[in-house]
Amino acid sequence: MSAVDVAQTIQLIIAPVVLITACALVQNAILGRYAAIGQYMRSLTLERLQLLRSDEAKIYIIKNGCKKSIAKFHS
Image (cartoon, rainbow, N blue to C red):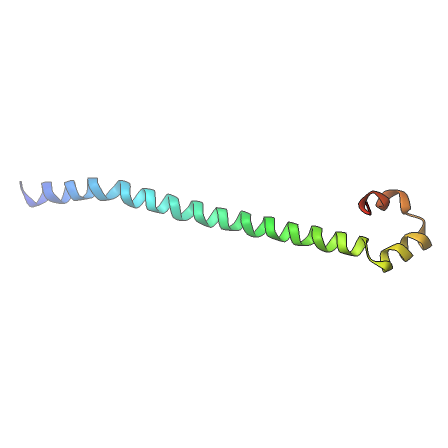
């Protein structure tokens, strides 16, 4: 085997490994991004529910008469 044949064989072996590794890195980055977005949405939902269940929200509902639209979140 000549040096050119050895170099081509090594390239054929390494190319799929590099491609799979690159795909795994991209997939990991996307998954991390989606996980962060999901956690952000959960924290906003929790904060919203805590605000709706607070005494200030009840006073606001009584004063402004918007009980129908928010009442379903109190149960």
